Structures are given as C-alpha cells and as structure tokens.
Amino acid sequence: MDTQMMDGPWSGRLYTGAWTPALAGGVIDVVEPATGRPLIAVGRAEPADARAAARAAAAAQADWAARGGEARAQVLEAAARALADMAEVVSRWLMRESGSSAPKAAVEGQHAVGFVRHAAAMALEPGGRILASTPARTSVAERVPLGVVGVISPFNFPLVLSIRAVAPALAAGNAVVLKPDPRTPVSGGFLIAQAFAAAGLPPGLLHVLPGGAEVGQALCADPDIAMITFTGSTGAGRKVGELAGRHLKRVQLELGGKNPLLILEDADVELAAANAAWGAWLHQGQICMSTGRILVHQGLHDALVARLAAKAQALPVGDPLDGAIIGPLIDPGQVARVDAIVKASVAAGATLVTGGTHDGRCYAPTVLAGVAPGMPAFDEEIFGPVAVVTAFATEDQAVDLANRGDYGLAAGVIGGSVDRATRVGARLRAGHVHINDQTVVAEPQAPFGGMGASGNGSRISGPANWEEFSTWRWVTTQPQAPAYPM
Ligand code: NAD
Image (tube, rainbow, N blue to C red; front, side):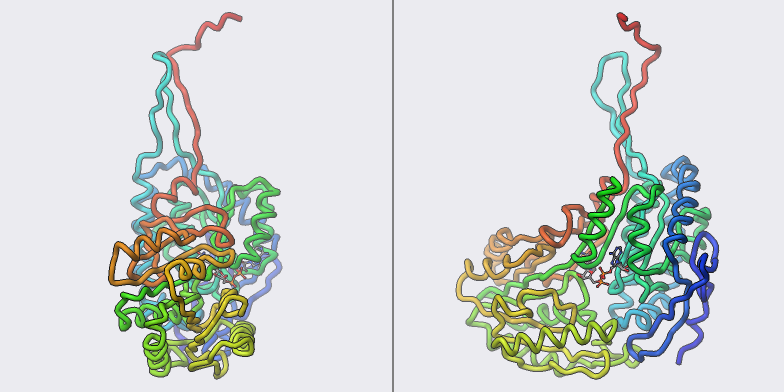
C-alpha cells in the first residue's frame, strides 16, 4: 500500500485556519473504494464545529473584504500556483479516495487550477457602476460580499465541485465554511485548505469540516452564514433549499441530471460511439452531467450498440492504481443501486447487451438497449457505468424522449449537419447544450446549472459568479446635505 501520501496534517483533524481536532474529538475513517481498506482517519465535524467555524469566519471576513480586489487576486493567483505544484499529490488522492482513473484525476486537478485562476481574474473586474442621478448626487451601485458562504459538496468530482465555489466566494470578499462529503474529505477539502494556506490566505477565512448531513443542516441554519451553495442529489438539495429558505439565506442548488445525447441519422457512427462511451462511462458514470440516455436514430442503432459493446469489453476495470479506466463505485450501496436499476430494466424488457456484473465495487461497463420510458434505466439518474440506448424514428420523437422527466442539466446532439443539430438542440430543456459533443463538458468561464429538478435556476462559474457570490449596495454622495422643506 502507498502509505506515504496518507500522512498529512489532516490526520484526525479539521481545518479551521489551523489543523485542529473536532470539538467532540471524533474521527471519520475514510475508505479507499478500490480496495475497501481504510485510507486515513480525519476529524469528524459536528454541528457545534459548524457554529464555531461560522462565527470565526464572520469575524475574519470584514478585513478580507476591505483589502480590495488586487490583494485578493494575489492570494488566489498564489493558491492556483500552489495547487498546480501539488498536481501529483492531488491526482493520487483523487485516485485513491474517490476511485478516479488516472486521466480523470489529472483532468480534475487541471480544472481545479483553472477555477482558481479564473477567480483571481474575477477579483480584478470592476465591482460596480455609476448610475444616472440628480446633478448634485453621485450614485454608485457596488458589488459587496455577502459575508460567510457555506459550501456543501459531493464525492464524485470532490476537488472541482468544492473549489469552483470556494474560489469565487473568496474572490468576491467572502469567508467560506466548506463541508466536503465525508467519503472524500482530503480531495474535497483539505487539499484546498493546504493550497490556500501556502498562498497566505489569512486564518479564519476558510474552514474545512468533513461531516454528514447534520453538519450541512447546521450551516443552512447558522446565523453567521449568508449563503449556501450546494452540489449534490436533488433529494438532499430540496432539504437544503427548504432549510436555507426558512433562514432567509441565498441558496444555490446544483443537482442531478438525466442527460440525453441525441445521435441524428446523419451522424458519423464511430464518433458517436466514442462520444456516447465517454459520456456514459467516464468516472463510472458518477457525474451529474453523465450521458443518461443515448437516443439514436433507428438506422444507426445496431451499428452504435455493436461499437459500444466492443468498447465496454475492451475497457480495463479495477483499481485505478493498476491502470484501470473504469474504477470502483464510491460504496457498496451505490453498487447495489446500480445493479437493481439494471436488473429491473431487463425484467421490464430492456436488452442487456454486455456488462451487468460486478466484482466488489467495480461495476462492468454495461450496455442496455431497447430501453423505454417507464423503465428505471430510462427514468432515473443511475450514477453508474451504464449506457442506456433508445432508438427513435423522427426528430420530434427524439426531442420528446430527451425532454421526458424533471431534470434539465446537460444535453448533446451529434449530427453531420451542424444547422440541423443546432435546431434540434434548441428544442431541448437543458442548462447546457453541446452540439457535436457529449454531455460531460464544463469550463471555469461558462455558467453552469440546470433547469427543473437539476437546480433552482442559479448558475455557477464564469459570468454567473459575481451575481451569485455578492450583492448590490447602492451608495449616494452629495457635497452637502440638501435643505429639505420640513
Ligand atoms: P448527496 O446529496 O447525498 O450529498 C452531497 C453533499 O450533501 C454531501 O456533502 C452530503 O454530506 C451533503 N448532504 C446530504 N444530505 C444533506 C442534507 N439533508 N443537508 C445538508 N447536506 C446534506 O449527493 P451524492 O449522492 O453524494 O452525489 C451525487 C449526486 O450529486 C447526484 O445526484 C449528482 O447528479 C449530483 N451532482 C450534481 C452536480 C451539479 O453540479 N449539478 C455535480 C456533481 C454531482
């Protein structure tokens, strides 16, 4: 076993600006999904830790905001450099803690650096506008930080999904309390703390509290927290939205998806199969943007299914440290869920072309054909490596199948005619539509978020970040107070 990387300041600790034990002294045993063996024990936060962190963050925030954008940008630039310098360690943690393949881990690490660099640039952008007013009055609308932002993040892209909120929140002058998923506390939190500490972020502005739902709920109700940004399942997101709403907090919800990839009759079937495989199986299908439905014109159906099956059978499955491209699912519960969806769909009439088996937590890349609405594989987000294939005859039918259900996160359309594919894409209910690409696409510069059950209409990244992580303050100035007639 690779023991070297397990050592770290986070052993038995939380991050509160320093590496400290949890108030009640509990620990979480983090398990390596590929082996099922314990990887490390880190501090386990409880609601009292959340309360203490929020209070400390609120106390530190005003000075940070007063420093101005230039100083904040310098810290963020240094954090981006520190994170880039940690690339090897970051990859290793992503592989061991979240079961990432080596390429997925490398891409996630690079993306994380990109999000911090983008946030550094954001801190240098104009922070307000001069408004029209009466001649004597100077009227300014300025962007001001909210205060303390609570970040609740999931296990699947733990680093990116935490840092894409942490970095812009800090850039806008907020302090942050981050609650990563307790299964991925190091890659989802402590590595970020380490990079920002190395960059000279003043203590108190970033806290990392691994813990369960009760810690997330404590953040949603905390009087010192002004905003919650949550990435995770739609079920948990509803609870977070309700509680944060009751406590009058701004809340940003980035939730699940059942993302369609439409393959039109004039598509190149080789390229379409490569896109469908990537979209459905990257990180074992544990991505909110995973391709959840492959809708293929009936004329290409058999050729596509044959190519997908060949790819599935050729992909190495197992421990990412041994070079596997399809690694483990996060835990046994998720393996059982994926298996139940596959079995129930086959029982309802779908064809199991390949896969449908598992060895421990490693689920074989699976191809299900003849999947129809009403089957769980068609209706539900699977979060496993299952390519769900449905044939269509007409463009209207394809659009109808794509838009079924409540989710509306990402969609892709592949076709020979860009005009036609674009026209079809415009009819899809999704926050992101990719013409001639699969559904798993994200960039720090682009506003990310979904419709319907995929979110609450908020967006994160790119032009959305100022809007989300700050608010307006209107300030007027006059040379002297007016002589009002009262
Ligand atoms: P999850 O909702 O179970 O957990 C996500 C985070 O929320 C974890 O930190 C968890 O501890 C916390 N949490 C759970 N219940 C909570 C509650 N009641 N109050 C406060 N916090 C709570 O999600 P998961 O199963 O670990 O992750 C997979 C889900 O996340 C999928 O549905 C996926 O589509 C979604 N996701 C969405 C995006 C996006 O950007 N839209 C990105 C990645 C994953």
